[in-house]
Image (tube, rainbow, N blue to C red; front, side, top):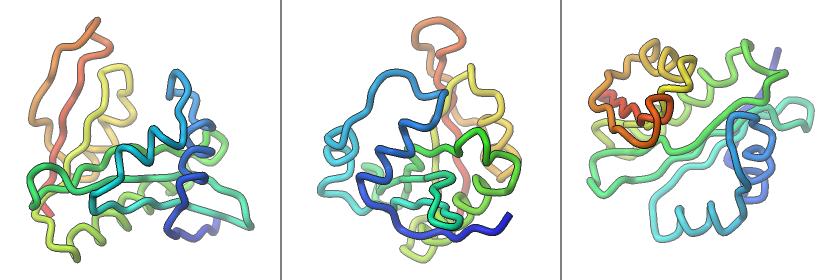
Length: 145
């Protein structure tokens, strides 16, 4: 499958967010705008023939040398085509070019595919944060750039 990656609008991020079945609850434009305002950020979408396949968004953390890969996903019907890898590669390249020294992400125990994805991409598990039941424990992963 051929697709291209480009910067995304907030509307596109919200639409993509709503297409990911693993994301519970409702998001809003304010959810994204409030998180990204006053920060250096990168918002990406993967697109094929005018159709959005996946997205990835992250921003500079409180530590100016560390980039936080905050949110992302691929629509179920477009998984296993390399979309997530291409988005992550683009994000990591951009972050390195901007001078970030490392990148981190948070996921949950209930998402073993995301944990495996991070490990495959060279991330290391740095911390497990108990929150709610064991399935909701946060897994913090980090990678040097």
